[in-house]
Length: 320
Image: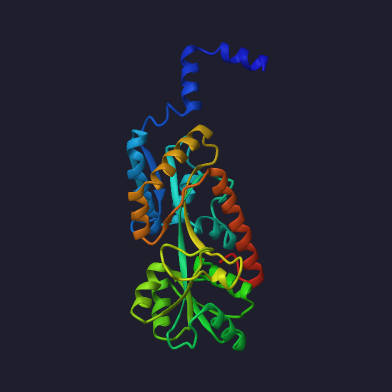
């Protein structure tokens, strides 16, 4: 402690003021901030623009959205950026799920400093209306009587919908057959045609068809009932402990000063708690969250552990 006080006292006055400003977060930001994210129109682009707009005023600097060809490219750019708080990224669950299936140019945990979980997206478990089932319990019973004979489609191997369905099947003790498509649009088209029988997919893709009777919504994948689909029971009410959600988060490069992370966290969480922003996110099919960097990091690690277990138990191929 004596040595530390001696060093501080011998610093030039200008250096002392600058250092204090950085530690307290008051000197940040002094120039525009960039949020690097996936292509325009993607879910992460929506959240990036929402956050950029909400942060510009309290931070006193312009926050710019920088769209890249994919989330992989965006994550790589930020993983290699200077850890000064001026380059951030917004991305979905794929940010930490992709590295479990294939080698990525970044480490989802070590190369990033978590700021906050921005949102959670619920999925809906649905069936073709020709199926003689109206509940999760009835689906499980039918699947057990016809092991492997019920098909489900997803946007591809390793997608959040694929992992959510395999996790459900494993926990329910049933066998379903996966049909991977090149996108959710093709998968849901075949479900509507009766070519596949069940599906777990986004609320926005399932519910418009369920409301007109073209699909039958059975349950929501959140641990508790969701405001996104009022009245729909959670799968967990029949399969205790089950939960599958798609998440969107905000990160900075690893090594970004703690004071800057704290400032970004506080302003972002404050914005996510605003009624108008909560409403915009709800209308987009998501639920606003906002938590601490430590909570977000723990959530990512727990999700990676859970998914790794699903991959192993389902015998899914990696290095795709």
